[in-house]
Length: 500
Image (tube, rainbow, N blue to C red; front, top):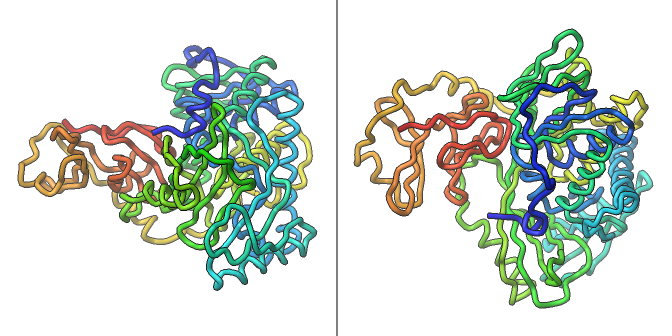
C-alpha cells in the first residue's frame, strides 16, 4: 500500500545517510516527520548545529500518510475549548494555528518550495438535522473570540441531504512530502545533518549533556527534541498513561472530471474527510476516514470499501489507485503536549498528541520548541504545556499494560498441533493457546505459518490481529508490527519475538 504523496515524491533526500560514527551537535532531534524536520529548519536557520535521527525514512509514516490539510479548523472543537478552558484559551489555540498556516505559506514562498500549496476554504458539514445545532454553536463559539467562521447551507461538492456547514476561509492544502523535501534542502544548506535508518535506543544524561544512542553510534547534544509521533521514552514523562492512538484509512481515486474546490469533513460517525489533488495532469479525489482505536477488536474488512463507496457516490467513474492507513496520537483532554518533556529533565522537549491535525500543529510545536531552545518568548506555549497532569484514562488500559509484561514463552522452538490451527483460515491470523502460553499466528495464502510472541515490546500489552492490513496492533498505545513481527509504528522500538 502507498499513499498518493509517496507516489508523487518517493525520495526526500538524494543521498541517504546512516549514523555510523559518534557526533556532537547543539540539538539532537529524534524523529524525521514534519515536526522534527520543521524544528530542525527553524533551529538551523537560527545558526544552531542540528543532528536529526530517523529510524526509518523521512516523512514516511504519519506525515507521508496525512490528508495534508493545513487548517485551524480541527473538527467541531472550539465550542469544547470555550466550555472547558475559557475564551482566552480557545482564542490562543485558534491564533496559534492560524499563524502556523501563514508561517507555512511564508516558508513555501521564501524558500521557493514546489509542494502544490494552495489556499482553500475548509468546511465541517452535517447531513443529520439533529447535528445542525452543533454546527451553529461552533460558529458562534469561533465568532465569540473574534475568529473567522460562517454558517452556510450549501456546500460543494453536492453531497446528499447536507443540512448545513461551518466555513473557515483562507485555509490551505499541500503535498507534505514535497514540502518536507524543501525544508530538508535548507537544513542541509545550513550545515546540519540528517540520518535515516538510525534507530534511537537510549537517551542518557551525562554532565548536563545528553547522549542519544543508536545501535551503531551516538550523538552528544545539550538539547534533545523527541518528535516521534508517540514518545519512545517512557519515563519520567509517562505519556503512555496520558494518550492513546487512533487509526484511519485513506484512498486516492483518479477522476475524469473537474474536481470541487475546498476541503470537507463531516460531523457524524463514521467521519469522512475529503479533499482533492493533481498528479501528472490527472485529478484525484482523496477520501480519508473510518477512524478507530488501534487494536480495537472490530470488523475492519470493509474500511477501504466504504471509502471507495463515498468516492463513487461523488464521481461514478472514480478509480481507486492508492490505499494507505496511518495513526494519530490523542491526549486525554484533546490538547497536544508541546514543550518540556518533564519537570525533572532539563533541555529535553516533546511534541505529540496532534489529534489528526498535524500539519498546522507541527508548525506550532516546532515554533514553540525552537523558541524555547533559542531563549525567545512564545505567547502560546502555556496552552500546550506538556507537563500538565491528568489521571489514567481507564483501569483496563493500565491493567493490560501491567499484567502482560509477565507473560512470556519459555521455548522458542515448538510444533503447533493441527487442531490448534483449524480455526485460522488462509490469509488470516489470530492468537492461539499452546501449553498455557499465547502464540500469534498468521497463515498466508499458501498455508505457510508465521508465528510471533503477541506481546507488545513497548510495555507488554497483548496484541490484536488486524486482518485488513495483516498486522499485529497494540490496543494500549498503538504500536504496530507486520505479520513477521517487524516494527511499523511507535512507541515500541523493538521487533516482536519470532517463534520458530
